Length: 348
Image 1 (cartoon, rainbow, N blue to C red):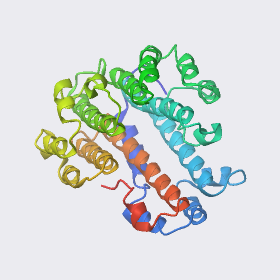
Image 2 (cartoon, one colour):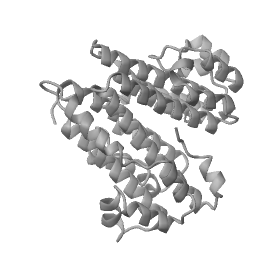
Image 3 (cartoon, rainbow, N blue to C red):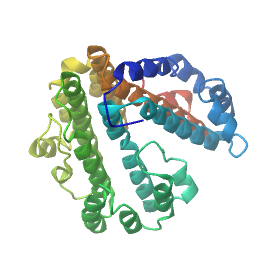
């Protein structure tokens, strides 16, 4: 594992493609939605999750076992990719995996906001980013959002969160805090990228991710009922929106979807983008944008098959597998029907 020296995309992409072949497909998801949590765990034990299910089975059961196994396997998979990567490839992959630091920060903040217990928060953490175990433990032990800000004061999230905390106190909504975390992550992600053609294609994907994150966040803010200007939480780096355009479209899902469908993403995203036109809720819209990003990443991976893009495409696909299995397990625990659970899945 080294950020120094030449890159080795041929080797890493070959290893990643081998792993991608073991990801669950539509047939496996159809089986899982008709299983109990115990049956899901047994099914996972017969796949790439065997090690985690066996290691955790004596301490956890049911949905808890599934969730801990999913998160541990995800972290192991991504740590492996970093171990294989060298030079510039390592830097690009490491940058992207810091998204899980952002995820963990937002998860802890949400847990404090909703008075969730430490154990309930910890099960949702994904230890695949840059934060070490000590930092994660300090976040879990924080008893207030202000304490979380203090834990992160020496990271890229410190100053943005400190500024957003003032707005949080005024509005009592998490949007300022969550968007501060997202903005800090994407600003670092997009800074000083190499100028070769494969990386420019990868940058186009990252800009698409920023565009869709802006759309998701604007709609979430509008649905929150808070008297906040969506443009104030605009994430720089995308191509699709300006602050003014986003503010204008933020409160009308139909107009926003139509705007995206008429944009540069129409031809690139194909069938996945058309699902946006059928989205009748914020959750459906977010699922459709996730599917669109998966499809976009896969397409770019075929354009430059020996580059960082197929690696990032696998990371997205693996992350989506984990989210789908988690949604199935939680849906079964909540007593949802198979059709209701299937509506929660992101499948391309």
